Length: 230
Image (cartoon, rainbow, N blue to C red; front, side):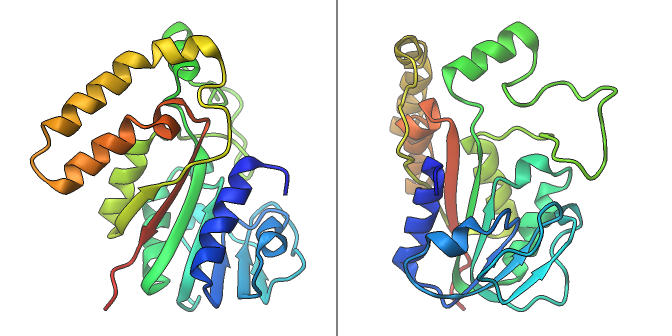
């Protein structure tokens, strides 16, 4: 388990101790190896073969949502998947449907809000790792299609029905380069002013998170969200 955000995801799952987990996309099956408890796990991936430690595994295109015949799970994990999809809203709604009431959904994706990414967009019109695909589109390949930031992911999760949406800290340099700290100051001051002018607690928490270190400087978003208990 060599990636910083892997540890963050595994910690969130281990703290809740779910007995059943859907891992989609499952990749090489790193999540089953990283956990300190032994849940029943099902996996989905279009590109990788069946990893060890999973009860069942399905090769499936997540752009079509989850397979309808899946059961409900206490936890669902979508690590580095939604940036590859043209229909992320459909997939998030599908995860919500297959999550038990009171269950937790965890999603990770590259963050495009850090200052170096914004400068790249200013110069080129494209965020890092999200180049122009004109003349390069190959369906069924691992293309980065849709870039994400904290506000966009928060909105999509809310639209899918999730509550208690939380951005988690990842153990990574924030900022990675010293000059990014200065460039990030206007953004953080703006978010701080919006938090002070918030009209309710949800809005205040949103802007505090938006101006926090992980959102403003981090290279990765790891977000958890819940399905309200019945």
